[in-house]
Length: 83
Figure 1: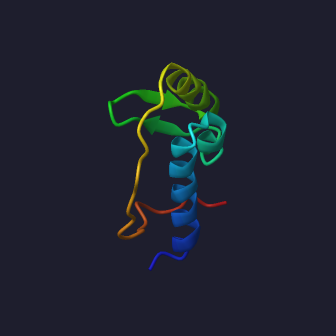
Figure 2 (figure 1 turned 30 degrees about the vertical axis):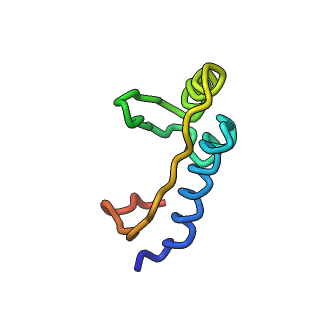
Figure 3 (figure 1 turned 120 degrees about the horizontal axis):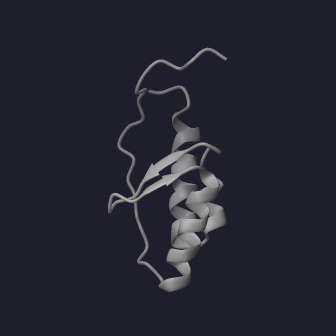
């Protein structure tokens, strides 16, 4: 098990909750300031502020359907850089 399994699952749950609440601020709050996010349609968002701005436009235009997610496992993708 990944040492931060519960924390990672909680962040993902909050990310989905932000989408389902149609809250750009809530969803963006789960990201790092310099996050790069690729949407399901290939749209690229660079940084938390751009991500939030893009989502505000989406939520203002229409009410997208809710997402549900299942986390089957959490594992490291690579070595963590030194602090």
